Amino acid sequence: MKKIFGLMTALSLTVIFCAAGYCGEEWPTFRGGAARTGAPAAQAAQYRARGDVVWETYVSQPIQSSPALSEGAVYFGSDDGGFYAVSASSGETLWTFRTENWISSSPAVSGETVLFGAYDGKLYALDKRGGKLKWQYTTHNSVASSPAVANGCAYFGGLDGNVYCVDISTGWRKWSYKAGREVFGSPAVSGGTAYIGNHDGKMMAIDAATGKLKWRAIVGGPITACPAVSNGMLYFGSWDGKLYTADIKNQAVIRNFDSGGSIESSPLAANGKVYFGNIKGTLYALDAATGNAAWSLETGARIASSPALSAGVLYFGNDNGSVYAVDAQSGAVLWKTDAGGAVVAAPALGPGGLYVTAMDGALRYIK
Image 1 (cartoon, one colour):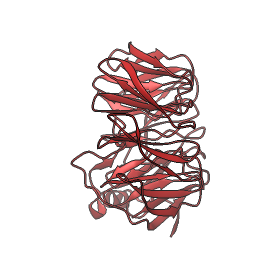
Image 2: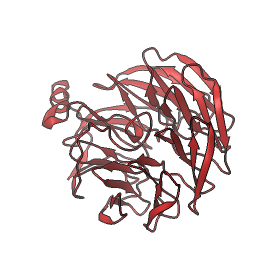
Image 3: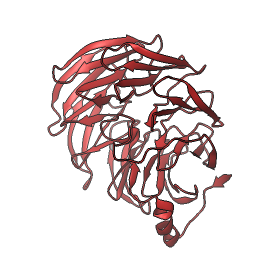
């Protein structure tokens, strides 16, 4: 079923927000939370999708933004410069907000506010119910980074080479840190520290309260994917093809795994394993304790999509336009669904299915 964006009344919007049991935040930000593990919280409902496309909603240009899900609405941006809110149950439009350039940043929902960056150089804060602009913060270049929300702040990077902390309530900058080269990637925030990489191959650990550098690691290629924090370890990939493990307490990289291809997919850390894809189309599962490969899966096309995990199943897409469901323990493919266009963004997990954006300009709900 194809849905084209139209107008809805405020009354319809309110009803749909809590229809069909969708009340409550389920996947409010890129990778599910500020630590960017890619797995839902322990108390969240777990499910296994069957691979059936229930509905699809089209916009006019490709979608590189991963969706966020909150209280019955799905939020995402597009290359057409539009930021969209649609019903999680039907795909009907709730509202649209226009920016001045394309959007690859994935949104973050905090309370009644939804935040995202755009290539017009701004971080936007909108009212999540109606899409009204609350404030905008202007940087010196484009914003591709997906904001992480913690401590009442939005943390994000800019192509101007800075990392920012902006107060969510006011839009005022609390601090900025000059990282050097462009910061395409998104931060993980955990334990009072923001972790983010840049195009110089620097992974930086920045004090989340003050903006001062705590420590950094320098690797052999740009870091454009988001890191993940889990069990005292920081996991991140690089264009040099390696997945790195850093011990946070000791502030040092302790091992790396060479995947043989540039890594643009953000790692998923859960249940003693670390999962990620590379540009050669291979999905890897590493043993978190040893860094050795537990299994690998060849998909035949670049994997930029970052995997998400629910009920022992990994969900991700590739440039062939396929959405995969893979057994997290064995690496066996459970099903594969055609998305119609390359899938470069991470899926969002809802209470009964997953939401996937694609380069054919569609958002799909798959159960």
